[in-house]
Amino acid sequence: MTIQEAQDEIIADFEMFGDWMDKYEYIIQLGKELPLIEDQYKTEDNLIKGCQSKVWLHAEYRDGVLTFTADSDAAITKGLVSMVVRVLSGHTPAEIAGAEIYFIDAIGLRNHLSSTRSNGLLSMLKQIKLYALAYQAKSLQ
Amino acid sequence: MHVVRRLDAANVRKDFPILERTVYGYPLVYLDNAATTQKPVVVLDAMDEYYRTINANVHRGVHYLSQQATEACEAVRTLVAEFLGAKHVHEVIFTRGTTESINLVASSFGKRFLSAGDSILISGMEHHSNIVPWQMICEEKRARLQVIPIDENGELMLDGLERMLADGVKLVAVNYVSNALGSINPVREIITAAHRHGVPVLLDAAQAVQHLEVDVQELDVDFLAFSSHKIYGPTGIGVLYGKEEWLDKLPPYQGGGEMIKTVTFEKTTYNDLPFKFEAGTPDMAGMIGLGAAIRYVQGLGLGNIEAAEQEVMEYALKVLREIEGFRLIGGADAHHRAGVISFLVGDIHPFDLGEILDQQGIAVRTGHHCAQPIMDRYCIPGTVRASLAVYNTRSEIDRLAAGIRKAMTIL
Image 1 (tube, rainbow over the protein chains, first blue to last red):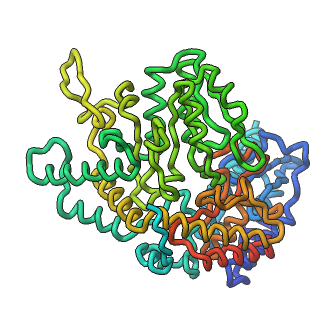
Image 2 (cartoon, rainbow over the protein chains, first blue to last red; image 1 turned 30 degrees about the horizontal axis):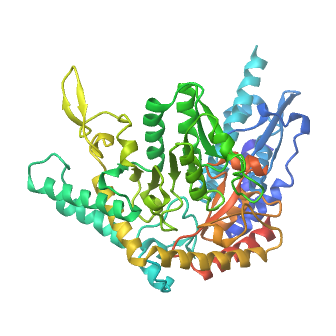
Image 3 (cartoon, rainbow over the protein chains, first blue to last red; image 1 turned 90 degrees about the vertical axis):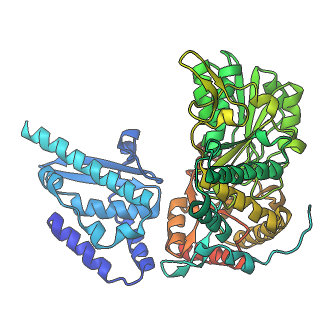
């Protein structure tokens, strides 16, 4: 599945729910599907700043693709992380670095999320893109 | 003073236009009053009227408007002095808020009285704004910061106070009411003890003046700071009260217009109190708004406000405690807390709970409430904080409880 297809799938999923409370329930459900980061990687370095809750993100580069594992101490945050990981994990650094992320706006999340939460989401996306750029640079060496 | 007549919350609410709005289709339940209170229409009107009719720069104009504006602003100073029970009107300094008031004292007091090896004594439940300014001046002067510890119930442990005071303390800075826990601190005891050692005390009263009657002479406090926006007034203006004898000894905080008597390139002589500490054009509309807010509070009567809030607080503690897994952070007794209920539910992250409450039109604060050390004390990432004002009702508490229960089904 391409990054675009994964985003479109999430957008379609969200369209099934009329009520925002249901959407939140779905986000929290998605959190339970997040590929969890191993405890050894829950380090200060892997902690993403800019969020009221803690988010750890670990990237692994193998066979030309980047795979992400993550965790959060807050359920909604974990769901958001899960969506991002679902969209971007398993792609090449070049695909990730060049990806346009539009599902967050499309599902109307930005209007509903508190600003600290959406800032956290943005810093996570930024961090993932930074990983991708770093690995892209490495693979070009 | 304590003529307790019951305030009719429905009538009080009519004074606050914003309370009529909805959020995500629900009537707003505003329980973030410790962050900032909403403004009654008398405050909005006063500021509007000021700009429409008498706006002019104060203290320096020869013209009619300037004199009118000056009189109106100085009348607010007099009002604040009365409100706080100050001995002199010139003991009231206008600042941008509590934070600036504390920075002013930290900087000016520190410059004059702090040397290497001295210390400043604060408490373990201070807001960052009553920690960081002291850290900064201590670092500059190579002085130390001492901290009064707190116990499991969120109360200050004063057993070691005498020993600490004897250890080079030059000033004590504590909050009257904790913004994170709502505890009303035993400030009289602290002030008496500090004065026995000849040490002045600054009270951060940002969470006190809107809930309790505060009399600076009765407290015998040396400095006291509060913000207008937490007592139904506009943002951007606040007050520093200081005893004349102390303010006279402190050097100015900022330089500029108004704070001077004469200026030559060789030497500037400073103005008298209170202007010595008010460099630049002040927030005139803010002062007018603050004046209207204080008159509004006086009109309701602080005793009545206290009684009304106390009743809702008791109700809230009763209703919220019925929720399974509800955990109150800080002291339990409603009579020793003002305005604030800080809590957690089960193992739900406060941020998650706050967000689901928000989705139901209920405004609370989540996080460390700018008081990280106290969260570390309890080993928690933060709390959910519901904070009360005079306009909050029992039915809003019911909405909060129902909102929490709904969140529990999702989270």
